[in-house]
Image 1 (cartoon, helix red, strand yellow):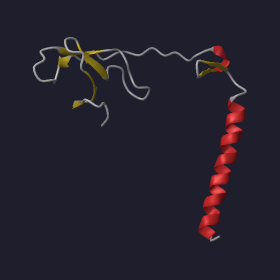
Image 2 (cartoon, rainbow, N blue to C red):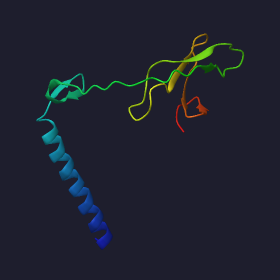
Image 3 (spheres, rainbow, N blue to C red):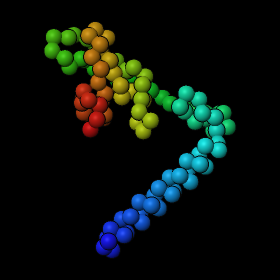
Image 4 (tube, rainbow, N blue to C red):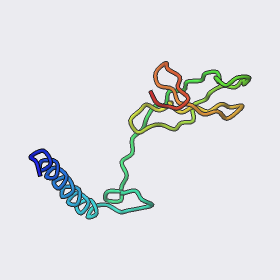
Length: 104
């Protein structure tokens, strides 16, 4: 076994050990409810201000408006998710860029 293979094996073993330790520590805290872990049974709550952006549906032949659904990504601002009030087409915007898949 070469030096590189030994280093790779060592890194993998170390990562596996750290993962087992973290899992054991994680299971000591909080309450598992429907797959979510609530620390001390109290979720953290934060108020956010929604950006109400309304724009025309981009689908051909539809005259509807894309309206904010109130859904958001955990790493983004509220107002990213929109749904057409006529045809039900769903999309996400980021800044001034339209992308029906919702990514950059």
